[in-house]
Amino acid sequence: MMKTFIGRAVLGSLVLALANIAYAGEAPYNKAQFDEQVAAGKPTIVYLHATWCPTCKIQQPIVDRLSSDAEFKSLTVFEADYDTETALKKSLRITQQSTFVVFKGGHEVARSTGETAEPAIRKTFEAAL
Image (cartoon, rainbow, N blue to C red):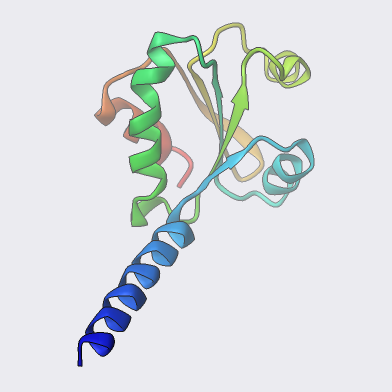
């Protein structure tokens, strides 16, 4: 009886964890995957952040929450390191960390830099849908 209960509890936890992963739309930046997503017209966001950036540290939990929200399950958020992705910064004309660039239908439709209010970041994410 106890083994059945524990087994069901473990199984339930596993199902919840997998469901959360299925909705999570965050991915490390990968040029080939990013180009493929944008070319296919899929809702895509590039988030340029830096580990040393205080604004990025405020944004990160918001990005994590929104990325796992069912409303944004079709959205992919590529997280790119501001300090190492120089070609990406140049191609998107990004001059500052804590920047979101939003693509829909293969084109940039929104951009936000330095925003830390969750409703404003949510609005930026909604532009991709």
